Length: 116
Image (cartoon, rainbow, N blue to C red; front, side):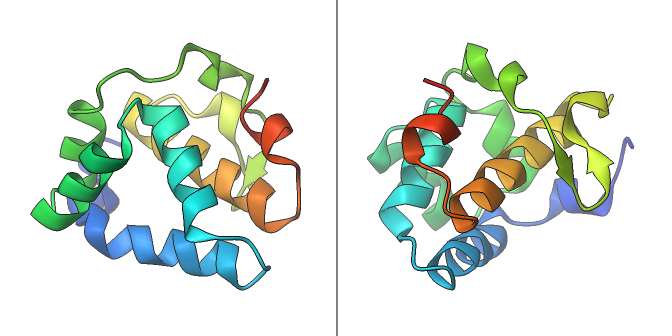
C-alpha cells in the first residue's frame, strides 16, 4: 500500500471526522483525544500542535512520541479488513486508530478500548 492517498492527507482533515463519529453516538472529543494520545504517545498539547500544523498522516505517525506497545492487542474488522492482518505498518496504525474510535462509538468502556 505504499503511496496510498490517505498517507498524504492532512491529519487535521481526518481528526474532526473521528470526533464526529464519536459525538454522533454520544461520546466526546476528550475521549477521542485520550484514545489518540494512548495510541501515539502524544500529550494533549502535542496532539493540538499536530492538528494546527496540518501535518499529513504519514508525518503524524512518524513524529508520534511513542506508539503504545499494547496496540498489537487491537483486533477486529474495520471497513471489511482485519486490522491484525494489515501488512503495511503505516496503514496498520491508521486502521488501529479507526478501530479504537469505532469501539468508542459503539459504546465500549474506555478501559477496554485502551486494553487495560
